[in-house]
Amino acid sequence: MHRILDALNRNAERWALLVFYIMLVATMFIEVLRREILSYSSIWGEEIVRYSFIYLAWIGAAAAVKERGHIRIDVLMQYVGRRVKALLYIFGDLVMFVVALIAFYWSFEAVHVSWKFGSVTHGLRISQVFFLSAVPIGFALVMVRLVQSFLRDVADLRAGKPVYEGDKLFD
Image (cartoon, rainbow, N blue to C red; front, top):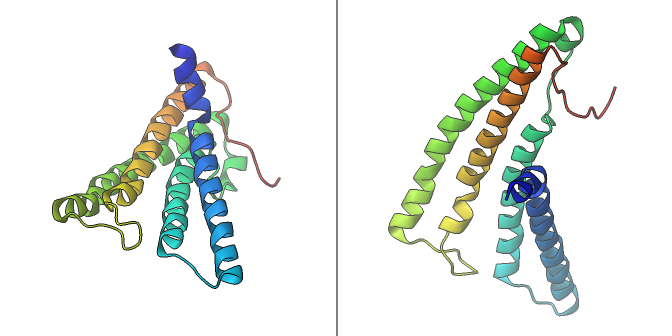
Protein backbone atom coordinates (compact mmCIF):
# COMPACT_ATOMS: atom_id res chain seq x y z
CA MET A 1 0.00 0.00 0.00
CA HIS A 2 2.87 2.36 0.83
CA ARG A 3 4.34 1.84 -2.66
CA ILE A 4 1.04 2.71 -4.31
CA LEU A 5 0.70 5.92 -2.27
CA ASP A 6 4.31 6.81 -3.02
CA ALA A 7 3.76 6.26 -6.77
CA LEU A 8 0.60 8.41 -6.63
CA ASN A 9 2.50 11.12 -4.78
CA ARG A 10 5.19 11.16 -7.44
CA ASN A 11 3.10 10.70 -10.58
CA ALA A 12 -0.60 11.45 -10.01
CA GLU A 13 -0.53 14.87 -11.63
CA ARG A 14 1.64 13.66 -14.52
CA TRP A 15 -0.78 10.89 -15.44
CA ALA A 16 -3.85 13.11 -15.06
CA LEU A 17 -2.19 15.81 -17.19
CA LEU A 18 -1.29 13.22 -19.81
CA VAL A 19 -4.86 11.90 -19.98
CA PHE A 20 -6.40 15.36 -20.32
CA TYR A 21 -3.77 16.50 -22.80
CA ILE A 22 -4.29 13.44 -25.03
CA MET A 23 -8.06 13.91 -24.81
CA LEU A 24 -7.70 17.58 -25.76
CA VAL A 25 -5.35 16.98 -28.70
CA ALA A 26 -7.19 13.94 -30.05
CA THR A 27 -10.59 15.64 -29.89
CA MET A 28 -9.25 18.81 -31.46
CA PHE A 29 -7.59 16.81 -34.24
CA ILE A 30 -10.80 14.89 -34.95
CA GLU A 31 -12.87 18.06 -34.92
CA VAL A 32 -10.51 19.84 -37.35
CA LEU A 33 -10.68 16.86 -39.72
CA ARG A 34 -14.46 16.74 -39.46
CA ARG A 35 -14.72 20.46 -40.09
CA GLU A 36 -12.32 20.54 -43.05
CA ILE A 37 -13.14 17.23 -44.74
CA LEU A 38 -16.80 16.70 -43.89
CA SER A 39 -17.80 20.36 -43.44
CA TYR A 40 -19.38 19.36 -40.16
CA SER A 41 -18.45 20.01 -36.55
CA SER A 42 -20.00 19.08 -33.28
CA ILE A 43 -20.81 20.98 -30.12
CA TRP A 44 -19.56 18.19 -27.87
CA GLY A 45 -16.07 18.28 -29.39
CA GLU A 46 -15.64 21.92 -28.47
CA GLU A 47 -16.88 21.24 -24.95
CA ILE A 48 -14.52 18.32 -24.41
CA VAL A 49 -11.58 20.46 -25.52
CA ARG A 50 -12.65 23.38 -23.32
CA TYR A 51 -13.17 21.29 -20.19
CA SER A 52 -10.01 19.26 -20.76
CA PHE A 53 -8.09 22.53 -20.93
CA ILE A 54 -9.66 23.72 -17.68
CA TYR A 55 -8.66 20.51 -15.89
CA LEU A 56 -5.18 20.77 -17.43
CA ALA A 57 -4.76 24.25 -16.00
CA TRP A 58 -5.84 23.38 -12.47
CA ILE A 59 -3.98 20.08 -12.22
CA GLY A 60 -0.97 21.78 -13.78
CA ALA A 61 -1.09 24.43 -11.04
CA ALA A 62 -0.80 21.70 -8.40
CA ALA A 63 2.06 20.07 -10.30
CA ALA A 64 3.84 23.43 -10.48
CA VAL A 65 3.48 23.91 -6.72
CA LYS A 66 4.98 20.47 -6.16
CA GLU A 67 8.01 21.29 -8.33
CA ARG A 68 8.19 24.96 -7.30
CA GLY A 69 7.68 25.73 -10.96
CA HIS A 70 5.46 28.79 -10.69
CA ILE A 71 6.79 32.01 -12.09
CA ARG A 72 8.58 33.96 -9.40
CA ILE A 73 11.06 36.74 -9.06
CA ASP A 74 13.92 35.30 -7.06
CA VAL A 75 16.56 38.00 -7.34
CA LEU A 76 16.38 38.55 -3.59
CA MET A 77 16.99 34.84 -2.96
CA GLN A 78 20.53 35.11 -4.35
CA TYR A 79 21.53 37.58 -1.63
CA VAL A 80 20.14 35.89 1.47
CA GLY A 81 21.41 32.95 3.49
CA ARG A 82 19.94 29.46 3.64
CA ARG A 83 17.88 30.13 6.74
CA VAL A 84 16.30 33.34 5.43
CA LYS A 85 15.68 31.69 2.06
CA ALA A 86 13.90 28.78 3.74
CA LEU A 87 11.84 31.17 5.87
CA LEU A 88 10.85 33.19 2.79
CA TYR A 89 9.73 30.03 0.99
CA ILE A 90 7.78 28.92 4.06
CA PHE A 91 6.15 32.35 4.32
CA GLY A 92 5.26 32.24 0.60
CA ASP A 93 3.74 28.78 0.97
CA LEU A 94 1.67 29.91 3.95
CA VAL A 95 0.35 32.96 2.10
CA MET A 96 -0.43 30.85 -0.95
CA PHE A 97 -2.18 28.29 1.27
CA VAL A 98 -4.46 30.97 2.75
CA VAL A 99 -5.32 32.24 -0.75
CA ALA A 100 -5.94 28.68 -1.97
CA LEU A 101 -8.13 27.94 1.05
CA ILE A 102 -10.27 31.03 0.42
CA ALA A 103 -10.53 30.24 -3.30
CA PHE A 104 -11.34 26.59 -2.51
CA TYR A 105 -14.17 27.68 -0.22
CA TRP A 106 -15.66 30.18 -2.68
CA SER A 107 -15.25 27.94 -5.73
CA PHE A 108 -17.84 25.62 -4.24
CA GLU A 109 -20.49 28.32 -4.76
CA ALA A 110 -20.63 27.68 -8.52
CA VAL A 111 -20.61 23.92 -7.99
CA HIS A 112 -23.38 24.22 -5.39
CA VAL A 113 -25.57 26.39 -7.63
CA SER A 114 -25.06 24.03 -10.56
CA TRP A 115 -25.94 21.04 -8.38
CA LYS A 116 -28.97 22.80 -6.87
CA PHE A 117 -30.49 23.77 -10.23
CA GLY A 118 -29.32 20.74 -12.21
CA SER A 119 -27.60 22.68 -14.97
CA VAL A 120 -26.20 20.68 -17.86
CA THR A 121 -23.73 21.42 -20.64
CA HIS A 122 -25.11 22.48 -24.01
CA GLY A 123 -23.54 19.82 -26.18
CA LEU A 124 -22.84 16.85 -23.94
CA ARG A 125 -26.04 17.28 -21.89
CA ILE A 126 -24.35 16.11 -18.70
CA SER A 127 -24.19 17.87 -15.36
CA GLN A 128 -21.92 20.90 -15.23
CA VAL A 129 -20.93 19.87 -11.72
CA PHE A 130 -18.29 17.54 -13.19
CA PHE A 131 -16.65 20.41 -15.03
CA LEU A 132 -17.15 23.17 -12.47
CA SER A 133 -15.53 20.89 -9.90
CA ALA A 134 -12.20 21.39 -11.66
CA VAL A 135 -11.60 24.56 -9.66
CA PRO A 136 -12.14 23.17 -6.15
CA ILE A 137 -10.31 19.96 -7.10
CA GLY A 138 -7.42 22.03 -8.40
CA PHE A 139 -7.26 24.15 -5.25
CA ALA A 140 -7.49 21.04 -3.06
CA LEU A 141 -4.51 19.55 -4.92
CA VAL A 142 -2.65 22.84 -4.58
CA MET A 143 -3.28 22.84 -0.83
CA VAL A 144 -2.06 19.24 -0.48
CA ARG A 145 1.12 20.09 -2.37
CA LEU A 146 1.61 23.26 -0.30
CA VAL A 147 1.39 21.26 2.92
CA GLN A 148 3.96 18.82 1.53
CA SER A 149 6.18 21.72 0.49
CA PHE A 150 5.84 23.33 3.91
CA LEU A 151 6.77 20.09 5.71
CA ARG A 152 9.73 19.54 3.37
CA ASP A 153 10.99 23.10 3.94
CA VAL A 154 10.64 22.87 7.72
CA ALA A 155 12.50 19.54 7.73
CA ASP A 156 15.26 21.02 5.54
CA LEU A 157 15.47 24.09 7.79
CA ARG A 158 15.78 21.97 10.92
CA ALA A 159 18.40 19.70 9.32
CA GLY A 160 20.41 22.68 8.06
CA LYS A 161 20.05 21.54 4.46
CA PRO A 162 19.45 23.96 1.57
CA VAL A 163 15.80 24.49 0.81
CA TYR A 164 14.36 22.84 -2.30
CA GLU A 165 14.11 25.46 -5.04
CA GLY A 166 12.89 23.32 -7.91
CA ASP A 167 14.46 22.99 -11.29
CA LYS A 168 15.44 26.29 -12.83
CA LEU A 169 14.39 26.99 -16.38
CA PHE A 170 17.06 29.65 -16.91
CA ASP A 171 20.21 30.50 -14.99
